[in-house]
Every structure is written in structure tokens, then in C-alpha cells.
Length: 214
Length: 264
Image (cartoon, rainbow over all chains, first blue to last red; front, top):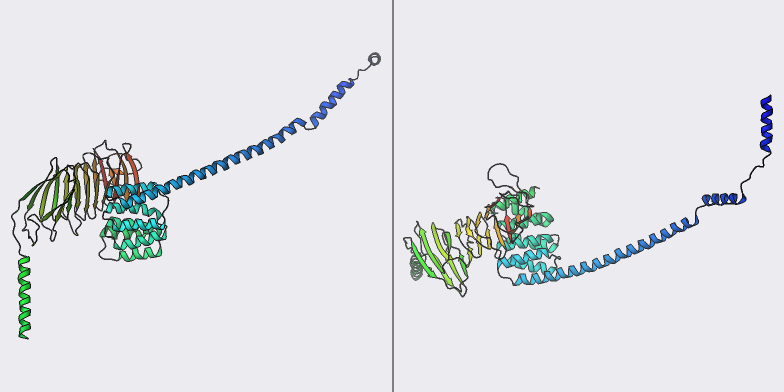
């Protein structure tokens, strides 16, 4: 009982002191801080918007750069193509003028490195050279170059015509390889008829038989 | 009627006698010799259709020296073709030595030529199985042959050789960098080089073929230089490789009989 009274007295004693309330300034500061944390910061929002704009600008800049560089590359490619075409024209002129087989073969080798496609006149001039050429090494070199353009109809036609007249087995095999690769109906028919010929060189016959089996 | 018989008989005997005299054969005892001075301006010596085995030996002299050896009776047909079965045609810059290959005989021509001239040999008559040998030549060589072996020994080149029906064996004493070299054969191709040779090799296999070498050839998966044992043939295609950082182009066109590249 005595303890209870002591406790009540102590309580009364404590209640005699006034309770301190937090200052209004602190309260306002706390509320302001609370509001700031609850709402997204105004400057952060502005930063991400700027980032988007910067990103778009950067994208446009890079795209422009790539577009320009592609344009430049296209132009360079066009110039290079033109240069190759001019070199090829020059080489064709040289080829017609050369007399020795070594010089012809060198020119053909250079043609292989400056190949800008073939037009009708060039195909015809190549085959005229082929038909009149006496050296078989030159013919083989010519076929290496011509073979790159075997998808052209005129090339196939000329090849078939030359194959019938040819009698060097190596040159014939080289021509057969090109015609087998393109596999046109007419070409295959000629090869099949050729295989039946008795007088065909055994090396050619053997090669042709193997090729037709595949 | 009688007159007609007489005329026909006259024509018959005229033709018979003319033909008989024309075909009259002479028996020649071989060893013939023929020596010719070659002026400096002559830079090309061209052998065309020589009717027999031909051995050309290059010497450091400006002369053509012919020796002919034969065992069989050599029929000499009418015409101004000389006793050797060959004609010499001189022009401003070249000598042409033209054979008369109406039959193929067991004859061997041994001919000395200047070692710096351009040597051209065209055998191109059908069924030619004779042997062609060239030794010690330092100038350009261009050869076209229908069959029979081509053997070039101790040459410099540039060599352009084609054999439609036989092998080509070449032994380079020095590999000329003057221009490209090109070798094409239906038979086997054997090339011996000095180990220090510099060349851009372009190997064109027109059909599946074995490739042998005693040295590693970059980009060409060849087999070891051996005739024995198993090997993997390479499929047809074009293979390129640089030998000792590259040099004059060497094109080799081969069929199925194998390519042997030996470095010594």
C-alpha cells in the first residue's frame, strides 16, 4: 500500500513539470522533408527528359554520320568500280595486241584481279581470241577467267561451240567442268552425246563419265 | 577404140613412171652432221614437227650444231629437204627448223643451240610419241607437244610447256623472275626446284589428283613426296601458295596423273 502511495506521489511530481512540444519550425521542416520524399524530385525529372533529348540527338548524329559515310563509301565504291572497269578495258586492249603467250597469260592473270563483269563485246572478243589461239596454256588461262562468268547465256553458248571443235584434252576437261557446273539442258545434252564418241580422248572420256555420274 | 586404149595405156605408164621416180628411196647411213653459225640478231629458234627424238643441248656459243643418229633406213622423198629430214628457214630475227614428218622414224636428233635464245618447240603432229629433252638452257622455252615425254633439265625459263598426251619433268637450275611460267600436262608433272626459289604458285587441278611435295606448301594440303603408301587426292580446283614470300607466277594445270614438287 505504501508503495502504491509512493508511486502516485511520484506521478503527481512528474506531472507538475510542463511537457515540451516540438517547435513549429521543426514540424514545418519535417513536413517539408516528408513532402519532398513523397513527390519525385523536380530536378531529377528534368534530368531524364534531357537524357531522352540527348539520346535522340545522339541517335540522329550517329545515323547522319553512318548515312554520310555510306554515301562516301558508295561514291568510293563507284569510283573503284569505274577504275576497275577502265583497267579492264585497257587490259582487253592489251590482250588483243599481245603476241607472245607469256604476255597474254600475264594480261589474263591481271584481268582475273580486275574483274568488273563482262559485256557482250568483251565476251565475243574473248572467244575470238580463244578460237584463234594456238597456245594451249593461254587457252587454259582464258578458261579460268571465262569460267567466272559461266552464268551468262552467251558464255555458255560460246563454250558449247568451242568444246565441239577442241582437241586438247586438258582444255576440253576445263570446258566440261564449267558446263557441268552450270548444268543447262543443252550443255548436258552435248556432254552426254560427247561421252558416247569412240574417238574421244580416254582421259576426257573418263573425266566426263565421272562427272555425268555425279 | 584402139586409139583410146593406146591413150589410156600412155597415161598409165606416164603416171606409173613419174610416181615411181618420185617415191624412189635413198638409203642413208647415219651419222650426219650440220653446223651453222648463228648471228647475234637471231633471238628465236623454232623447231617445228621434228620427226624423231629431239635432244636440245644449250651451249654458250652462237651456233647450231646438228647430229643425227638412226638405225632404220630413212626414206627421203623428193624435194629440197636436205639429208637430215629437216629444213632450215632463216628470217630476220629467227631460225625455223622444220621437220618433214611423213613417217615417224627411229631417229635421234642431238642439237646444240645458243643458251640465251628463245627456244620454241612445236611437235604438234598426231601420234607423236617421241621424246623431247632440253638441257642447260638459260633463255625462255615454249613447248607444245602431242604426246611423249618432255624433259627439261637445268633450265632457267620462263617455261611455257604443254603436253597433250604425256608427262612433263622439269628441273630448274635457276627460276627466272622475268615473267610467268606455265606448265600443263595430261601426264604426271614433276618439278624440281632449288630450295631458295621464290614463286607464286597457282595449281589448277582440272580433275581430282594427287599432289606431292617434300616441303610444306601453305594452303595446299598435299601429301608427302613419296610414290609409295597411301595418299589423299585433292579435289579439282585452284590452289595458290607463296613459296619463299612469292615471286614470278608459276601456273600448273594438271589432270589426274599427279603433281610432284620437289625442293632440293
